[in-house]
Length: 93
Image (cartoon, rainbow, N blue to C red; front, top):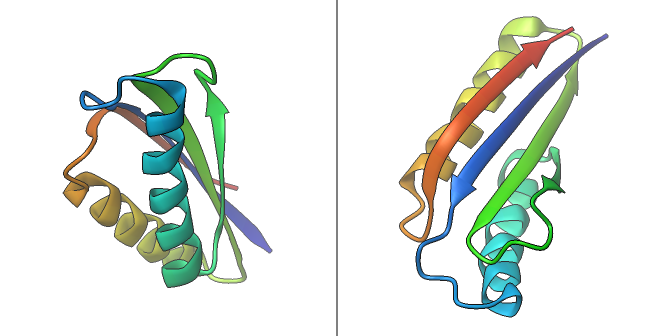
């Protein structure tokens, strides 16, 4: 069993409150969960209006499959118009 993880830090320039940040995050996390069947959660910058870090995890028997899923998740995140990606870190164990 392998676990692929990815953390993505990003800036949300259009957010003027925690409520607007939560709307952007909820939409993004729901789309990632439903499209790729992975776990996703906000893991840092909880109280900042325009900053967030999310983590994505996928469990698989095949490392190549986990890498492909994470790559597709990152593609979806990078196409998101409401956010600017600052940092990406991936790991496969």
